[in-house]
Image (cartoon, rainbow, N blue to C red; front, top):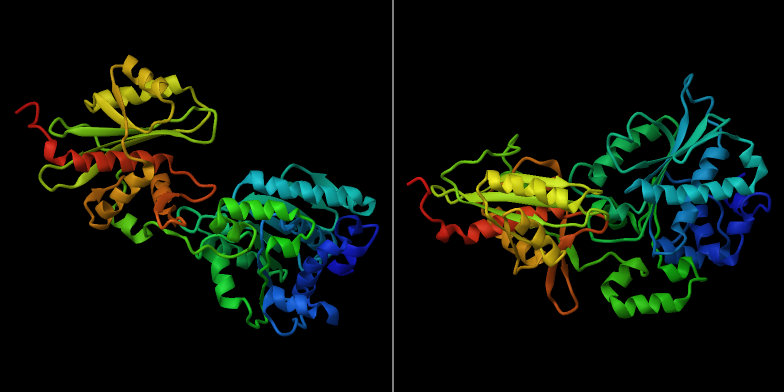
Length: 465
């Protein structure tokens, strides 16, 4: 049984995928699996792929920039179930080896969302349910020595598997730099597909013109390849049941964002803020923290948080070397939630006092509450007169001119490299973290560096002179 037959079988998935609204998806899957496409559907096939004729044989990889609410999660679940339940790899598997259909997302929360769709498809069919040996929140093991497993976008966690298929969820929003860049994850995955001749399927709303999804689109969209098929489609084409008013409202509120979210177009208003090479050039290898030195005049910056959300509370301390003019980051602290804000303030104040810092600058989060907590512990807290976007703008030339020395902290580098510059409709630039990422540490570090650079001409004589 092929995947199109399964979509139309009343005992399997017709209840979910039998309607006319799934026709565009049926055409894409037919092309990917090398199945016939009716003459009446060739025009839509060309619109989706920009190819003159459909493939005559299955392809190894499918890359799909598709608009939001276009049915990607449902299709990811369908492919996962089909690849795991309807294939037998026993003759290719070694004793004790399992063929894994791996579903990878930026985080486990997103992956589990697709796992719920998978569970819904399995539970509808008594035949499929009988094949399940063991089920957890993150895996489903079957009698045919296949397994569906969810995991996060990590080079380490994806190694060591024998995969019959790999499904990449919302890959446009994975990191392109940092500890687990999308390109390195894909490179780590491809060998796992070799034994079983497995397929790689990437589904995502598009984002910036960078990363592996953009590369696949740029290199293969509208071009014949005997290995890779790329299709692109807006939400309205893939899910005609969605209320058009939802899309219209999105365009009214933010046209640039809506073109990507619902129009499936890669954004032209987003670009990387800083290169990895520039960051590496100012990072001092193996330097984690510097001790207090009486001859230095230290400044500190705080990025406050409430302790119950997703943001860490962070602080950074820096100073300017009076001989070289280098702005040196001395210490960084980050406390992940959940935490008590009062306890974190106490910890930070002890650190500041160790560096003889009596006044700090910070963001405006929490208003008087944050200022009062620091004041109670003998530290004056002054709200910054700069937004974080302004701090990042002033940080960039300092790094590019190599006037900065950064600590060798993985999360610091990841957050800095992950910053993006965005241009609004009015032409104004803003700098912020990418969707799903964080900038808690780099916000504090940027504030400490910029403040230190501005105090360079105001540094008093050493207190011991």
